[in-house]
Length: 326
Image 1 (cartoon, rainbow, N blue to C red):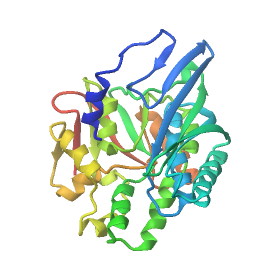
Image 2: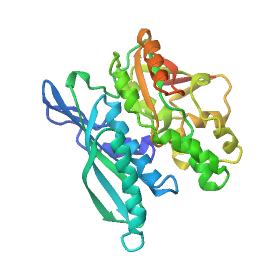
Image 3: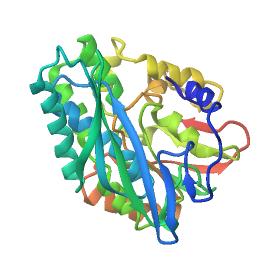
C-alpha cells in the first residue's frame, strides 16, 4: 500500500472527533487530552518478517512500533502484543523467540508488555499497540513546520533496499548486520533530545519512504528543499542496486509522488528511488528553527547517532511541495 492508497481509504473514515482529541488520522499516533497537564498517546503497528532470525524480527517490529510514540514527543508507558501465526504449523519455539525479541526491545525502552491478542494466520506478523503520555503543550504533530525551519534526519536510508537484496540473494550476509543495526536502534534518545528544543514538527520515516513522509509534513503551503548530498544513505545500497533491489512499495511511493517532486540537477533513477525507499524502523524527521538545529545535531552526535544530518529546509510553496537538489 502506498501513500495514495492510504489517502483513498481514509476518505471512508470520520474526519472529526471530540474536542479532547488532539491528534488522529493525519498523525503518527492518536492523542487524547485527559486534562491540561496530561494527554494519552496511542499507536498500533505490526509487520511481516524482515529477517530470518525470529528473535531479531521481534525486536525490529517492537522498535518500529515504538517510533510513532517517540515521533509525537511522548514517552511510552506500556505495550500490548499483536501476533498472527499459523497455530498448527509454527513451532512454539519460533513464536516464543519472536515474543522474547519484542519484550527485550520494549524493556530497552523502559516499559513492559502487559498483554496482547493473537489470530491464526498463514503469514506470520508481529507488532505492538503502544500507549504513551505527554503534556498537551509538548505534543509534536506531523504538520507544524514553519518557513525557515531546517530538517534533521536521525537514521540513514537504504534498509528497504538491503532487505530486498537479501531476499533476492544478491546481497552478502554481512550486509544483513548493517541493516539490522539500523533497524534495531530505538528512536528513544533522539526523541528525548528533541524535547529539549523548539521542534515544530516530526514524523518517523517508514513505509512511505523519506519523501512520502516528508510530503505528509508539508500541508498545502510549504515546500521542503532537500540537499541530496547531505542525506545519509547506507553505502551498501549501491552494490545491490546494480542488480535491482527495489521493492514494489518503493516503486509505489515514487509513482504517487512523481508530480510532487522537482529534481534540481542530475540524479540517476536509482539515486532518486533511494529517497522513496520503503523503510522499517527508520529514523525521525525533525523540523525546527535553524538557530536551534546546530545544537540538536551536536547532541544527537554525542549519543552515537552518527548518521544524523541536516538534510534540507522549509520555504514558502511556489510550485511543487518537494525540491531535491543534487
